[in-house]
Image 1 (cartoon, helix red, strand yellow):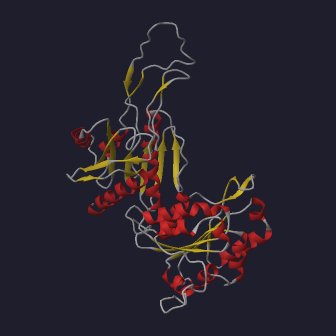
Image 2 (cartoon, rainbow, N blue to C red):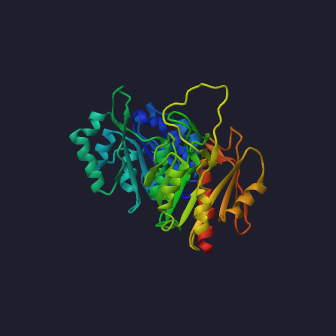
Image 3 (cartoon, rainbow, N blue to C red):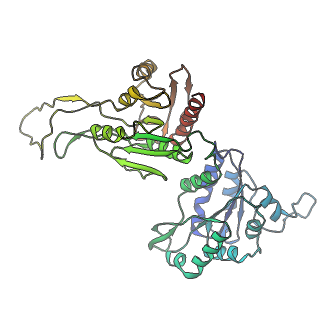
Length: 408
C-alpha cells in the first residue's frame, strides 16, 4: 500500500462538504496511513468530532490551547502537528479559510499548522463553496496566492450544490480525494510500471444480430477499469480499450471505446509492438452471428435459427507474438471452482499470469464491486487473494506483476 505509514494531517473547515470527510479518513486508514484531524469551530456544525475520532482512531484537534492543564498536555501542538505530518490536506476549504491561509493568519490550530508544516511537504487544498463565491475575484486571487506559495489547489467539480443551484463548487467524492492524496504521496516513480505502456481491455463486447439486438454478457468493466486506474497511478502510460460500459475514464488514461470483438482486436493490435504489459480483462464474446441483418428482424416464425462463428481470441493473439520483454495477463471466470481450467488456459494461450475468479453474483465476478481472485503464473506460483474491493485486487495484481518484471 503506497500510503502505508504516511502521516496525513486533515484540516476540515466549515462547509457542507465536511460530511464527506469521515469516509475520506476511512479510505486513508484502509491504506494504513496515520490520520490526525484538525477542525475549525465552524466545521463542528457540519460533522461530529465523535465520528471523525472513531474512524481515525485519534483524538480530534480543535483548539490551539490544550484543554488539559497538566504536564501531559502538548503545549506546542500547533508546531508538533506540522512536524508530524507528511502532508496537510484541507478539505473542504471554504472561502473564509482560503482567505485566512492566503493572508498568512495563524489565529487557530488549522492556520497555525498550515504555517508550521515542514518545508517540501505537500499542502493540498480542496475549495468547496457556491459557484458564484468560487468564481469571485477575491477567492480566485487568494487561490492564486496559495499556488504561488507552493500549495496544490484541486479545482472543484461541477454539479448540484447545497444552494440548489448547479455549477462549479462541489468537492470531489471521497474516493477521488483519496486518489489525489495517494498520487501526491504514493510510490509513483518507484514503481517498475512508471514510464511503461500498459494496455487493458475491459467490459463486454456486443455482437450484433440486427439493428436493435445483440449478443453480450453481464460484464460491468469494473475490474478492467480498476486495473487501468491503478496502473496509471503508478506512472504507467495506460491505454484502456473498453466495450460498452457506464464508467468514467480514470485520470491519465487514454480510452478507446469499441463495441464488437473484432473492433476490440483492431484497436489492441495497434499496440502489439509498443506495449510492455497487456491485460485482457474484457469479457469478449466467444461467438458472433455469422450474418448481420439491417433493420429489425420481424417476429414471423415460431423459431429462429442464428448461426454463430468464432470471434478472434484477442489475448492469445497478443501472447503468440509477444517478445521476451512483454507480459500477457488474462482472466478465467467460472460459475464454480475449476482451477484446472485456469491452468489449462494459462498454458494454452502462453500467458505469463492468469487471474481465476468465480462468478457468484454476490461478491465476485460481474457487476459487483468486489472480487475473489487466485493468481497463477507461468513459473508455477499460486497466490490466493481473499474477497476484496476490485480496486484493491487490482493493486495486488500489479504488485505481483511488478515482481515478475523485476525478475525479467
